[in-house]
Length: 299
Image (cartoon, rainbow, N blue to C red; front, side, top):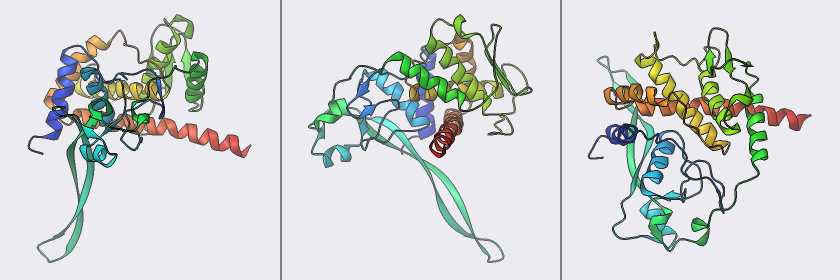
């Protein structure tokens, strides 16, 4: 890449935050012929993960795309389609590592993994002509709301986290290892409750006996605190998308945006780090769903 991939992505996220826009809000709210859409999909209909989810959500909002599927120029050609002339693609990234054999002063060889990141361009299917019909299928009605909320209840219950209701504060205490939530009835609607719970449950994964996530936070509002809040914010976005819930804007977002901007401007890799930790947290929470399903089958 001619320009720094980390910087390009960070600049994109910073530009959205400076406008007061959260770029990690799912831009569509419907089903598709390809199935229930939560995260953006590759051309082979496999969901993107981590930072690419945020980047493509932001692109969809910025450019007004309602379709959630993206593919490369070559992939479109292989389907007998073509990207319309003049269309501008969107950046996604690929992280991997290469193994290099090195020889020390004594002539002894050792292998070292060197991580790298590369960017490549994808196009939304709305920028491509000649694709098979299923890529442009119209949105269908969402499932019954009660069914979705039941699924959310089951998702969080399967973790067996200690969730205590009462008071007017939503938070996670690592000391007592409990999530504290206001009563369900005090929220404006059910989705507000579950989106807030998803945020706090992402914090719950940071406990030393789980993912042991620590950014060196020492006080309220410092850089480590801002990073953990960013991870929780992204984690809530991913969970809400996977459960087909609308991510509600929390009252404290305005205060956090300033802290997030400071962190992102000082470290061009911060958003990648936060997205990676958020994805790890959601994978951890999803692991409980798989364990529950296994137990149910065994019973």
